[in-house]
Image 1 (cartoon, rainbow, N blue to C red):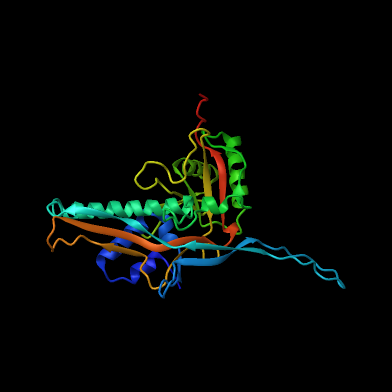
Image 2: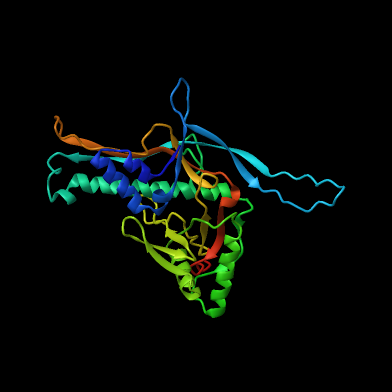
Length: 324
């Protein structure tokens, strides 16, 4: 069974759970559109939150056959991969005196819940791109940067987007984008970048007549390049550093194109588990400090086909730092 956060919202009757799910969806295009396949059963003695799958690495071709001859043999190539699901989120503590100070919509509980949801969403986006599997520090799955490193969809053609483009430079940039998108096995579902790459794509889309804006279910405007949404993944949790960083020495950054789907890039979750959970502080019992938590998971992300995602490395978006 596969579900989205919108499906998870329909399956809950708790008003606060609905609010938390909506906040995750509103603050993250990726979480709102990502499908989670509930494929891991954590029950049973010794069971682990691990998921093994087969990734399509390269496709096979086809050809004509002369009568009286056989086809030459050729095989598509697959590779085994695995991920460990992890839970992520955060906790906060509030003094009972502060819990009811201010309007209900802006009191301390609502504020801390909102900020915890924001940080969990940012951390998930960071792990989708930059995650590195490690059992030592509880990093359960690899992100797209690691998965695509050295693959056939790692695009390294030089590009300079650091200054407003004249007509010729704009055409070169558009040609580069088309070549980059051509690495995928189908039209991508989204382009993922940072503020600088997204601003340049917006400019190029307007020049080429490929720019459009449409409202999502929350009334938010989603921008598209030739029908493909482009999304700024924002900053890492607790910092001002972008999820998709800019090299301070070279002024270069990366751009990702991803095709979402159960045969492409998708999430995995635990069977029977809730994708999102929250625990509000309980001020009805003794004790001055009360704890609240927000949690997403257990979840992970998987890439079922290498050509369902691509990364463009080394796009110059700022002038290089002067040599010291």
